[in-house]
Image (cartoon, rainbow, N blue to C red; front, side, top):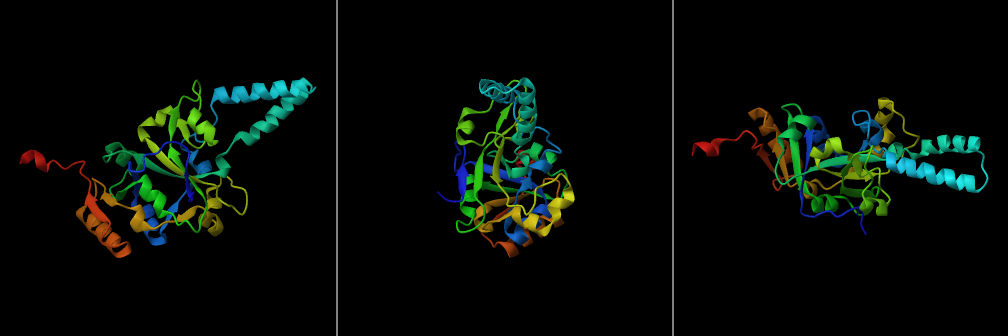
Length: 264
């Protein structure tokens, strides 16, 4: 089956992008490894990350109460069990994610939201290239799929994803639908339980668990440099890619502000 397992229908040739600042891009090139961000940290900026919609929580609670009543539990005992069991519906400590944007063309909005500075790049690739970039002989299994966007107050999980058993990982709040996200997920093998303390994630063993080796020449089809970048930055990225990966990966300038064709 390979290391990468998909949870919903993914077009292997669909173009996907990863918008990132230079520091993270440089780390990718130096380590030949994709970094997976712990979902517990993502939740600090996106509070709906890996949460359970109200409809599913209420359904689970109702089914559990009826089952417990059916075997003779008191209402007081049921209430205590529900409170305790609710603690284990949070899947965020168990997952780390690597996120991409699905689009045939580069997105000005993605530059603004996910880079926000002149020294940034966008990695252009396809799902098939991502799948093939992971070494089949080592590393953790990778779960991949397109994100479904729902209203957590009134909506429900996609039936397609429910069938696979990865509901919280591949759903996000409808406020973020502009992201058109494709994501990769892993279950990191941490040496101790995750915490919300950022320093916990800086431990060497933890960082090692969050990085997965990839073949850069397979992974990256093109590197697109920020529309705000100065000429020296473009030249530096071009040289860096050539020295690290080789000539097969092309480096181009963003076309967001390119109006030369209008004057022909």
